Length: 192
Ligand SMILES: [Fe+2]
Image (cartoon, rainbow, N blue to C red):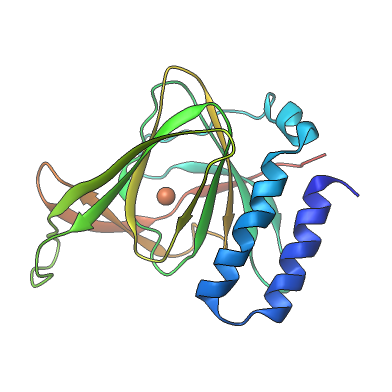
């Protein structure tokens, strides 16, 4: 059984057993941690194509979608010095694991009273540099961005459901504009 197959089996078991979303996603973290240490997946990842972060919608590789529990495994490969937009994932839980390279993860807090449509004031609250093996658990509606450094970075992302089919928040701190857009395009990619 490959490390990915083992991850899927463990994640399915956890979804069957743990109905509380907060607890379930905390318990998913060590499963992804183990997957990130697998030498075979790291080797494969050297050949994964870069995902675009520009334009209206970003891209993710789609490795797996669970037919029963709906969770998905994505890949996100950023070319050097690539920055994601500041965004949230709406209701979707996300586990973001760095497989290769280093990057900066930023978290933002919302500081306005949410009374105006199309308007949001956000302030950078966290900016941490992370490297291979680091996992970031991103709860629903958490505002964040990532930026690769001088090298290509590879992340394996596990989401509660496939992104792309529903609206997610976007934020521009320069203009305080808030808007919504569809999440990343899902590009099917076969894991070996
Ligand atoms: Fe994100």
